Length: 413
Length: 124
Image (cartoon, rainbow over the protein chains, first blue to last red):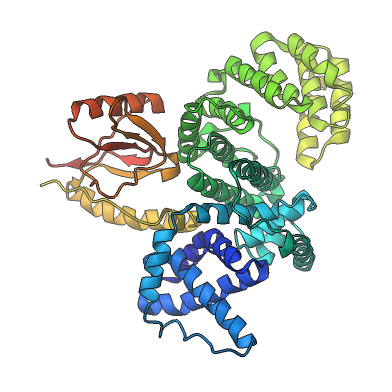
């Protein structure tokens, strides 16, 4: 229980709750982070010697709070507190904190810590970097690596972001139900962003960016633990797990994208799929559908199919239709067209997407899908035009390579 | 005599293990299991999915209550468990309802998906 990797995992696991609680005490992000840091250093010295505490999080909050108060007193030249191994009441105080740890305060602490990273003035990439640093506790080097930028650039980005979320603006009062729901929605969106940063990486970058997906899943599970009855959080967590379950099957040896239909389903992570499906089942019982739940339900229908031809495309079509109603967007209609093509044929799918061309004129996937539908209909010349547009709009070499494969097939027959 | 060995640990810490650390733990546990299996002493082994995937059916005055999350009352003790093969959570809840009806007392049934299952074989 006291080997370094266990302690490391315990400190990582305790971080969101501990920093969140310390932020509530000190109302200053830097002080809270320093206090947690100090508590971690003491844990590394103390736990191997005395064994791990019953509740590592409570220990870290208690010791962190004392050490920060101690520092503050020393700075104001008052009497210092005794060091923690002389404190006779450490056990008692720890027990008191353990008893309080289930209270709603702690739930709001974690939510607040995540929420301050979603500051509306911060661009998405800064929100993500800040959350990974403050909430997840990744090092600047780890974050820089995941974002494929230099360490000093990332250091600056995080410092700037921290400056923006100045302590004066952090909302410390206990949120009412409405505010809590609003914060939860903002935080969910950020967790999804973190996931997408990792998920949308090309094959060459995937190795470096995978931790972003794992971290997003950990944060989603954390949210779910503090809001166990929120169907949208179940949906979000399920969505991330069902997508990440396919990670190993998404690229071939040369780094080209492998589409869902062609993936080796043996490579899908069945444990992750099982957890995602269980969460969707739980969410559906609440009968309060939302965008994450529906997207997860779509991913679930893919995950349930052992072979591509077993996929319930009409179910997917219906789910996309519902999603279109909740969050209308041309991209969702475009995705729906793939299901429509499978259920009712490429002709109808083409009718569905043609009105989108104006709004999606700069979107790679639009022309990829359009070209594919035209190709199925045997309209080779038009397909070629669409594929050429797609190549011009490709975001990664892998995307362009995939479309070139279609063009090759077109000229072969 | 058959014994059940129940494993307790801090879920958020276990969830913070990297895949490599997790694999290493599973490998070490596998060595222990293999020794037992060879001696014909190993029954079923299960690793449960996180408590966030759990649902609890709690007996109440009328219809049982269905609560998201794990069972967390301390005044009741862990008395036994079933492993059932279901297509959906609803089916598992129906089974739990039947068990609750057949059982005269109070009590709760936590329904938790199993992530890893090995049926095992014992001489009994």
